[in-house]
Image 1 (spheres, helix red, strand yellow):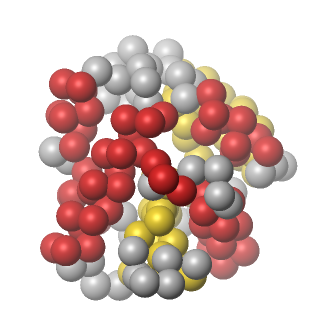
Image 2 (tube, rainbow, N blue to C red):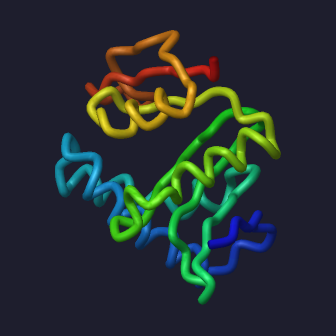
Image 3 (cartoon, rainbow, N blue to C red):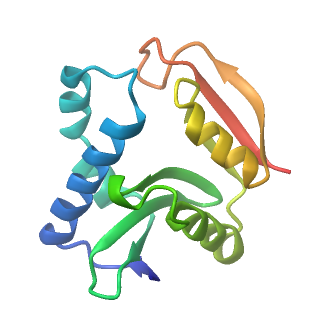
Length: 147
């Protein structure tokens, strides 16, 4: 596996990452309805295209295994392929962000306990909680910082 910082975001790459995103969300965001996932899916390509730093974990064959987006020292998104969960992809991406870009803060849905546990295992701690997400939906968010 290799970690690659993406400069040019081709349509083919964005399609591949969108498919990876959807599989990951359906596996981990059980609190979202199909309709909500479909609605969010419409804005993901723009988020992938506009996040300041896009980093992809790739197989030796060049297939995306996971990706993350960073804005400064903040993690904006991290998704791992459904098939690759539990194999260290997320850990390698997060460590890369911490080592190369001083990643030190992130937000996670409270209703995604496996993600919260993963980030806490990686040294982050909750410092704030909101009742709603950034779009005003009833999905509490946890704000975490690196210890």
